[in-house]
Length: 162
Image 1: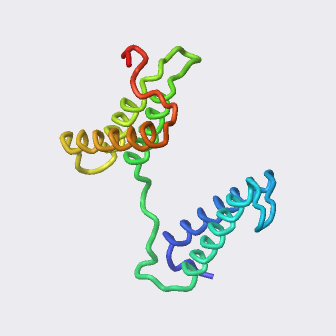
Image 2: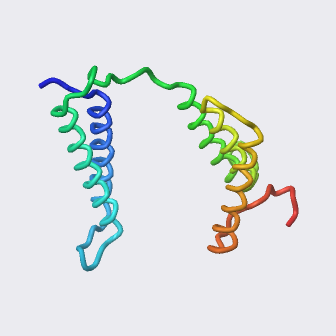
């Protein structure tokens, strides 16, 4: 059978693999039943739904004819690097690295770093717009997590009092 859309085929394959992995991983928890759900019920359900969605996308890629077969393009290395680097920087700045004595810099610095680094993944980088976005995200996160939910997250670096 010929693959008629490579993009859809590999996207469906990825969904099926990730959904299957989550479904298998969820079975190590108590699943329970519909009336009394355990901690593994929701991840199992989402994993199965994702795997089924992936299977439907794979079937569609094998059946529906597309122009030029929609080949998979080359890897987008720049966005991939910047998104992964942004997430790593966020984690390190938020929690620090006690093993090598890197202190936690707090939520505000972590959000600014995340926004600045991930914005470099795109084609257009406008520092002013990125700083406005980082400020809005920082204020919104502070209001949601610290004020409303009252979570105990370090907001500022340890060397800044208050």
